[in-house]
Image 1 (cartoon, rainbow, N blue to C red):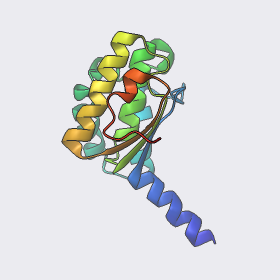
Image 2 (image 1 turned 135 degrees about the vertical axis):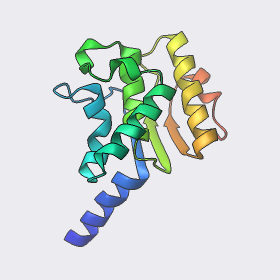
Image 3 (image 1 turned 90 degrees about the vertical axis):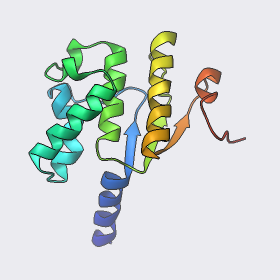
Image 4 (image 1 turned 180 degrees about the vertical axis):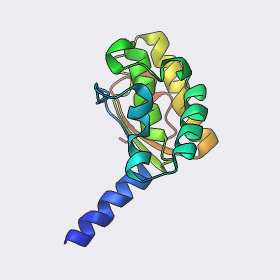
Length: 144
């Protein structure tokens, strides 16, 4: 049983990314540290961690806030940090719970474009729960 739990935890760390509605960022860590948590737990090389963070944060336009704390950045920036944290391990699946729930319509559009880009360019499956018709319009498949 213990071995199975370990294998499930490893599977989640390596294959799944989570974007929570309420961000769930650790306020005592900087943006950079929040994004790096999963790779640090996986004992990834620090040079690789920094390379991935810089590349991903450039794509999400949050390079300039890496040394700030979650309380020092906007809601839209927090959402993009949460997205980066979900994507940093290069998961095959991202689970997103109402990912635009706290964003204004302009930032929601930018954010959904980013998720679509990740889906198309990185071949990442995104399973999203939403009540927002705008977000649902980005889906390749809608469950009945």
